[in-house]
Image (cartoon, rainbow, N blue to C red; front, side, top):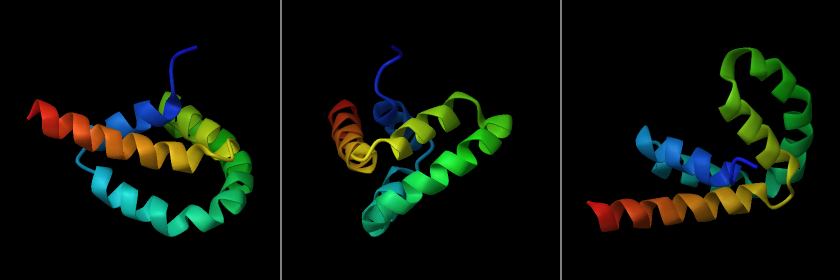
Length: 86
């Protein structure tokens, strides 16, 4: 296994400077997680044409009922890791 997709996505968002906006969007859309899971199942195969492994990671998170919460947690930890290293 390649590791946790939530951690890889959080690290990538942090690297691009998008961790804070992503965290806000995740909080706002957390009640919609079951609907997003259904949408992810339909859209992920189409997005693979463009995205590769990040899209696969996102698809895995959407399929997991606790995926959005794990991503929120990883975004928080990524911010802490960044603050400690900087």
